[in-house]
Length: 368
Image (cartoon, rainbow, N blue to C red):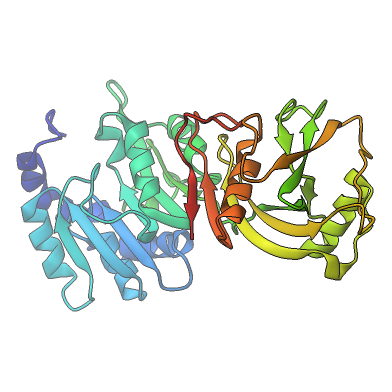
């Protein structure tokens, strides 16, 4: 190996050697078949997008392309790229000149990132691995072929060390020892040689809490409840509200919460949806709120009472056009959107925003 392995000149000089070595050029039919058998087990059965970084002259890339995978190779040596393009001609593969640590490809574009005998030579391996992970789609796979060679002055990357680097950025990994399989190398080897295969977590379906809020009107006033002893926004005013339970529709949830919190038994026709508001809390968790309107008053017989004094210190009526400042910002944003006649809106907190309404703070309400 050359001491200055980061230079283009090194890779240009090594191109011919790598193409002729049985474990790199795969010109020996037995060696090629041995690598083909291993590679088939590391790549998806269905055709996918494979990125071969530090592809050299394209030996492994050619195997993947022959099985129908859409292959992109990247190498920093123009000479190696020239040889790889010639080898891969007619397969539809793309070969680019570029730095494997910062490949000139888009993020989230590949099902597999394949790298052989390269990571051990790169500085800041953790940062490089994070970059490679970002190139993968959800559920994608890293295939890293590495080893540790030499007795008196060994070089390389032990499997235990690489596993510790890869573990935090992937969901699961396995290490396959390759040194005992002499067919892969065309000879018996005594070094540590292995393939580390690591999978990302599959894409997760977007899920959100769904909550319901009651805008109980009495003329130009609206009912608000002061939170207490809940551990969240205690001391602030909020409309009667709650979460939709599993298997429950939003209207049924609103009727249930109304009865539980303020003792009103409303019928389905006594509430109507007036606003849907998606909200993100300062912690980053998102939820979707359905705001329902209902009318109260002595004539209708709908006079609220505090049914949850352990969670609510008081109920009060407040002018809708002069809402108090000591409110939960989420609820106040919903009431302001409602008063303005909006049916759909966003309320997207930034991480440092307070939970409570801040009169002088930025307006996080977006009308849709």
